[in-house]
Amino acid sequence: MSTHTREWLTRKEAASYLISLGYILTPQTLGRLASEGKGPPYKLTLSHITAYSRQELEVWAKANTKEITAADLRKKRAKMESKRRTKGSAPHNTTACVGGALASAAKSSS
Image 1: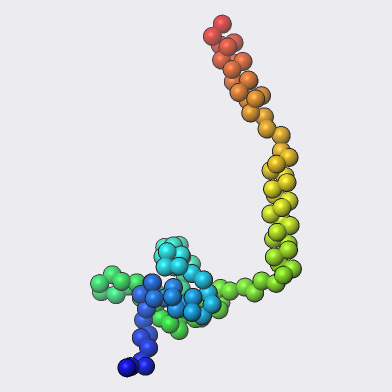
Image 2: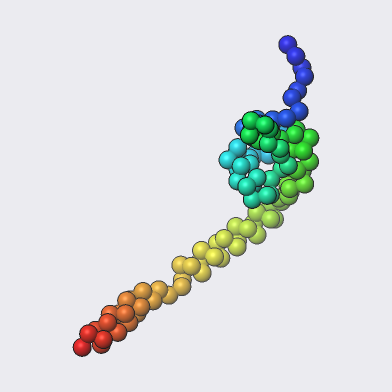
């Protein structure tokens, strides 16, 4: 059995490799990031297969990872809760809008 590890990985293999390193990315996410120019460097083979270098994947993942603390999570939760409360308490003017539209339509038809 060969212990040689391939240097270049397909998108699916690259996602699995990143998962094995603790970075959760799907092949679809890698594809989306590639199309946006935000993902790890890759090359297209002659058969149009996207190939990622193991070394470049590691470098990219480390450079694009932020350590999240418990304090960060509390801040994010509080911000989301604040947005939800603001959304829920906002007055809805749908009746006024609909009524206004009906009123102007009624005036124009008279």
